[in-house]
Image (cartoon, helix red, strand yellow):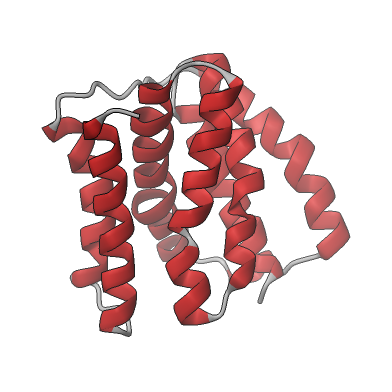
Length: 179
C-alpha cells in the first residue's frame, strides 16, 4: 500500500473515530466524513472510475436481487419505514462516498485481484469499528461480507456504479430489517 493510499485511509479512520468521540451527530460535522471520502482521491489526483452504464447498473441490480431478496425473506423487514429523505441520505451520504473511496480509490490502488478485494474489505470493516465501539452496533463489523460483493463487482466492471447500487440496496434492506 503506497503512502497516499495509507494516509487517505488513516484520515478517514481518524475522522470517523473523532466524530464518534464528539458525540451525537449533527448535520454539519458528520457531513465531513463523506466529503473527505469524495475529496481525498480527487486531491491526490486519483481518477475514480464511475460511469453511467445500463449493463453495469443491471449487474448491480441482479447481484443485489440474488443476495438481498433471500436475506429479506429470511430476516423480514418493514420497507414502509423508508422515506425519500432516508433513501437520498443512504445514496449521497453513505453508499456513493464509501464506494468512491473504498472501491474507487483504495481497491483501485491495491490492484484488480482477490487480494485487493480482501484487503479493502478488511479495511472497510475496520472503518466501521467506531460505530461498533461507540454505538454498540457490533454487527457493523460484518460489513466485511457485503464489501466482498462490492469489491467483486468493481473488479468485474471497473466501475463503482454496480457496487454503489448494491451498497445502497443492502443498507436499505438491512436498515429496514433492524427496525
